[in-house]
Image (cartoon, rainbow, N blue to C red; front, side):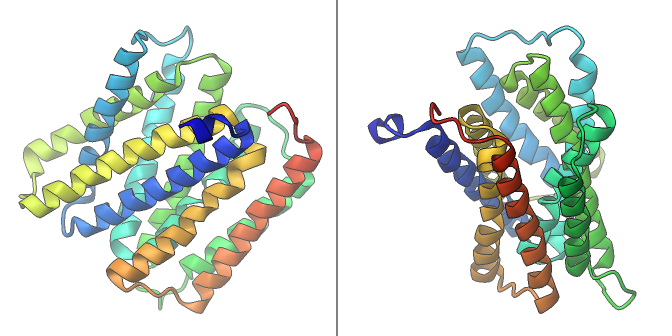
Amino acid sequence: MKLLNSMSNRAKGVIFIVLSAVCFTGMNTFVRVSGDIPTLQKVFFRNFVAMFFALFALLKAKSGFRPEKGCLKFLIIRSIAGLAGVFGNFYAIDKIDLSDASMLNKMSPFFALIFSALFLKEKVKPKQAIAIAVAFIGALFIIKPSFGNENLFASAIGFFGGMCAGAAYTAVRKLGLMGENGSLTVFFFSAFSTAATAPYLIFNYHHMDLYQWAALLAAGVCAAGGQFSITAAYTYAPSREISVYDYSQVVFAAIAGFLVFGDVPDILSFVGYFIICAMAVWMFLYNNRKHPKNNAC
């Protein structure tokens, strides 16, 4: 703790965003390890566990449960888009390589740029537009859209999940601009997702053994760790300084996928990884040139 306190805010931000990447890789791994369970059931347990962590954070901070004025509709939009994003990610995790699913989910920052331009009226610069277009090309290398690809549907759902996650992050940004409590945003999303998926469990519950229970509870703990770590990361440093480090999740996912499941992505997937990561690095460098680092951080 003493070492962390001695670091710059930027260094703290990098540490927490890498920690979030480790946590989300753990979440994805445990979700896949849980085996042949319906995706909605996995989504329920992921959010049910995270909800209690968010509730504890709210109670500890003695924060209220009442949203700021005008924020309720954006909390609902964030929750609907976030739930769709988690569903798309979990469905892809069960069907394709872990690293492929993780990379498709990492299209979310590019979609966030598009949705921010459409709904928050934040201008997309020409270089940002180029990065978005090239990143989409990278995604096509991973999806491999052809009738010969038996995983085409799962890859498309994973891509859709990344798009929905981008919409959710745009709503989160709007809530932040409106002064909404971050812990309340996490709690609202978790509670909304739990309530939305609970009816499915009531009528279509799939029996789970002790191993599967442990795997999904571990996935929920990792999800909570990832959410709070990434919140801390962006509290310490702005997105332009640390967002590129979030792509470390793809490295962790590739390692976990190989060690746990024996996944070996094909050459086209590696080309897609390189293209998307290159565009993320380019945007990182571009944003930092536009906004020189503040040494006070």
